[in-house]
Figure 1 (cartoon, rainbow, N blue to C red):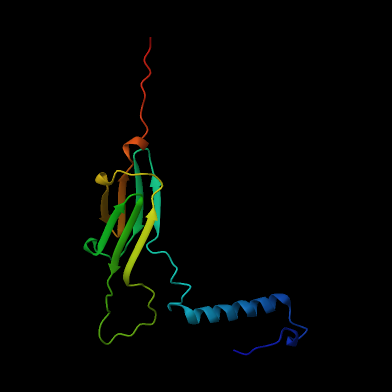
Figure 2: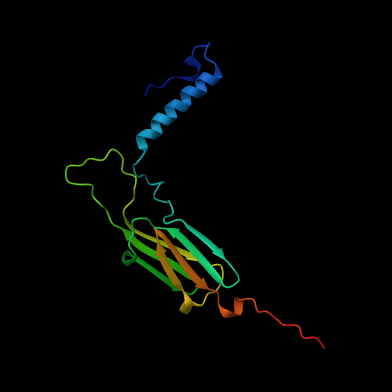
Length: 152
């Protein structure tokens, strides 16, 4: 890559052309990095989760494609949920070379603080089509209680 001083551009260059050149150069630079792992990428949160709730439960949904249920470990301690597992490396074959390899493999761990206290005895998990759904019942004292108004 040639280093060109800003003021060495011909005066006939229009700002739009210079921006276009800059964009092409940035695209070229970042395309060289695609598929590689860098320290700033290591902070990526995996697996990503959605946390929702209704009156009775907290729901955690996360996508774990290619991971078998026996390779997962889910635990609840106090108000902390931990999801651990391993995505095993699947080789394409002996004489195969990759053009791009972006799919991560290896161990992962995701820990999060739950928004409310839960009843750990009623926690359940289901895994279907690569999506893990964890249902965590709220602690009884947090559930809304319907109060019947009596007429006198």
